[in-house]
Image (spheres, rainbow, N blue to C red):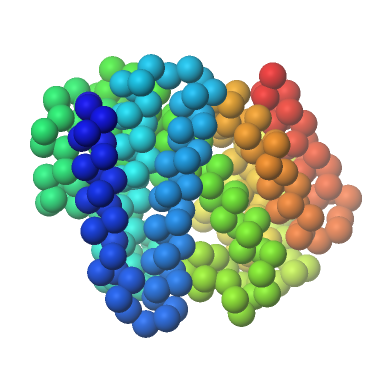
Length: 261
Ligand SMILES: [Fe+2]
């Protein structure tokens, strides 16, 4: 993939998202959130690519993956007014539809198309399938880290706002019940595993899920970035003050430091 081809994709993205902003105020806030998320995932991807010493060629593929990974969010929101896949459709599949419909990758060689599409297809799965078609898991692993890192940023920022100012679709509709934490979610975190979306009942459970993602990072550079930014601690600070929660969070932070090298 040439730099010029990547530049063309970036230009395409700006033109593509523009009309989606032409909606009511609540809709525009939610769409803007995803535009900003995409830009920051691109920035984060560049940082991880540099941190992991990727070749310029691989960095460009990684960049294209970051740019397009959530492109399905725009038609998803317009059609269903939600970012909740379970109430609408899988946004990774929707992204692939957009890529095909707009013929975005047709000028790339077949291997590059496969690498980009597969990384996007698997970016939001709880687990990457054992069998994949790509010759490498590199780009799948990269986007999964870059996406998580920016979602941490997004929620740390969101939680710092008063509830009425938060983008409505960003908290996926979970009720903000400050004292409630589901036992199953805290147990999963304490065991060093990733909390399941199906087990979430409240916004606090969602925070636990976000914290549990530290157990699903692939690169040292990603762990270092997230430690430096202190966003896990910021998320944890908004959980109820209970000893067993503190212990589970401390375990997650310790695992993060250990993996950061
Ligand atoms: Fe994303």
